[in-house]
Length: 158
Image 1: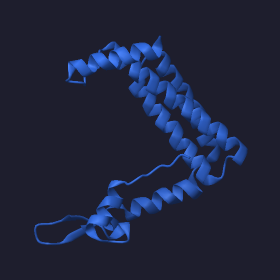
Image 2: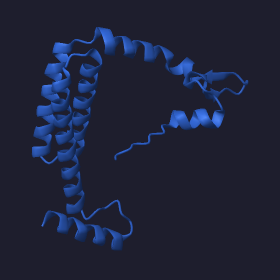
Image 3: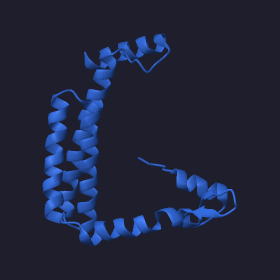
C-alpha cells in the first residue's frame, strides 16, 4: 500500500501559531505591532488563480501548450540539459492540472496525460543523475561518499 504524507510550510505554521484557517496565519509583524496575515498577502491571488483555473483558461490552448512543452522537454533531454528540461516538465504538469481542473480531459485520457508527465520527469531525473555522475557528484563534499555513489551509479547503468 502506498501512502503520501505532505506537510507544507503553511500547515506547520498553522500548528505552531494555533490557527485553524490558513488565512489567519500571521505572515509578518511590523515594528509598530501591526500584523500582516496570509489573507492580506495571498487572498486576491488565490481568487484570481481559481477564476482562471476553473473558468477563464482556454482548454484548447492548454492542450496545445501541453504538447509544445512536452516536445521542448524531450528536445532538452536530447541536448543533455536536465535543468531546463525539468522546467518544461513542470510546465506540462501545470498544463495538465489546469486541464484536469476544467474537466477538459476525460477520465480515460487522464491516465495517459499522467503517464506522459511521469515519463518526462523520469527522463529528466535519469539525465540529471547521469550529468552529476559525469561530474563526480560535485555537491557531495565527502569524497568517499561521492566515490561510493559513483560505484553505485556504475552498477545501475551496467
